[in-house]
Image 1 (cartoon, rainbow, N blue to C red):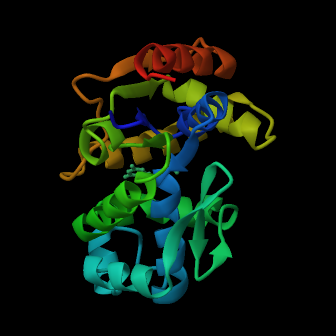
Image 2 (cartoon, rainbow, N blue to C red):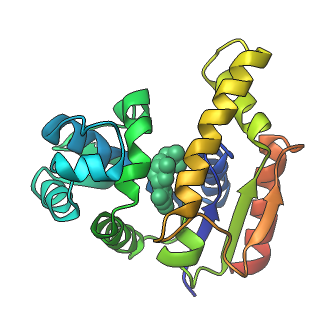
Length: 236
Ligand code: DC
């Protein structure tokens, strides 16, 4: 039995926090697939340039073609490295876990994640990474649908855009006022729309995913729910 738990959902739905804590509780490793898309985006921005106004077409004009980005990823290299129980993103041997969370990377990552060659490369890295590891909680957008469709447990997390905006702002230590929530919520909706309507591997729940609406749940409650499902499914 493949010892993978797939956790998918829209931006700021708490996937990575949930996946990290579930992994800790089970003694499994945690792999955040978004971190690999972000590390590739960081590498491409630094090496190839800002790429026009942010549409994929502009970026192709600037050299953001799939084959070029994949070649860059291999050459630098861009990698996920298992450190303790967490896969950490590296570019040219440097840990980029913090650098990949910048607004600049966030603004460009959806366009890069829509490139077919990039997705094929990222998926291969993920499949290679979990081989030989006792159990891995993987979070992203297409883990249950494309990367590990055979995962015995698939979770799709949702929450209203306003609630996700509120969580994101308070995570950043910002004052959560109505205007800020509205703006952040709109920005999240734009990224969700881009991720849900792309032709390849759009964000959507797998047919056999467990849907978990976390709008009214605490992080601890959602973690407990996933751990309970996992304990019922995976032999210890
Ligand atoms: O989860 P995140 O915000 O760090 O993800 C960054 C971007 O990467 C997100 O806008 C969509 C993309 N992504 C994806 O297309 N497929 C995944 N499995 C994970 C992330």
